[in-house]
Image (tube, rainbow, N blue to C red; front, side):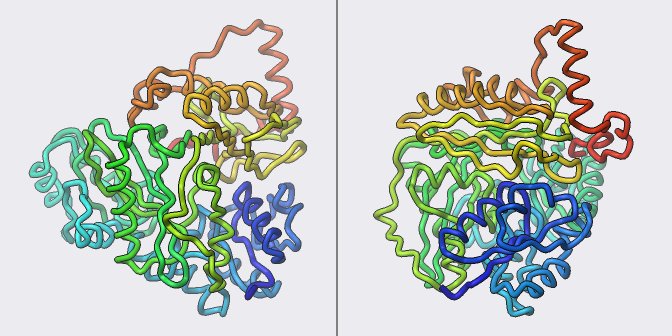
Length: 489
């Protein structure tokens, strides 16, 4: 093995996931972490740790030079960026190469290509994969965009050219609100990505979000690992994911996986990547490509028995992964629920504090990816995801039933979680029948769920326990960045 030590430029459950893959390959790990993440499972599991900055992401996890310096200081051969933070930052990939450190991911060129939504669409159109009708021209003034929106026909989606995750994305429903929505999207885009460019797409009324996991080895062989159903989203952030999708016929599945492989081959891609599509009326359209490991990769691993993180490391090291497309098959059905520290009864307001107790039910065909344990503190500085709960069963209906059992038996105390919210979703008829679309949450669960009546004693007891768990955070709410503006604009 070329790599003796891998630096991990991330935190939480994905950092733990990468550490475990390194352990399986007999590679030492060094965790590059912020000052507040000393109380985390990844910090305890890593062979070495390096503090790279204070709590604020811009000074630590998003600080390219701090990450490079930390990796060099500890003699790392490579850096794995996980997902989020710098994982799709072309400048970071280049900085790694310039420093003589291998970036475990695609090339700088691939990241730039797919990070720019307009150049990505141009490549996709070149290989003949359908794209959503829209406008990707260079003129970005409001007058031009309003004119093009009228040509496309309302409703229209205005989207940031750079970035993702729902930032810089607005729906324009008529000409009267076009100017306001375009200006708002541009402001958000420049704040989030430093790039005010936007483009327009026809807004699909009720699409499904289907994505295809691809992987390309260092020799240029491209594989697909079938599809995932990701339609359960809140403000463009996924909540529940599945492998595969009950909505695809074998013919449609073949077309979508073939299209995904064509895109990756045309781009000379290397490593793990995900091609995302919108599906409506049996027609699919390219949405975007994520040039990194996905949060939801465990469901694909469970149905294909392939280790994507290990494959990433081997490919970056120039080692064979020994895959053959014909041998990659799926078996059964897997569901993943994202466990968030949030109030399920208050539209998902994040919850901070110390985890007084955390336990997950043991048993066959269950997997839990988590970065925090009993005694650790959930801080207000980062994403509020605590863990991912994943189950595998022979059929989708069995998987739903088992996930409900897992949620019922999971205990997280000291912080509020979205467990009641997840249970309500899994029990909804549209989810059970797999007819849900990306409008599912907006239609049925946009404001969370209604709380059951509590006695005065129960309410006062819970308030006191949560207060003590957060060490007085209720008194310090003004200093909590989640307390003021926790929702995406």
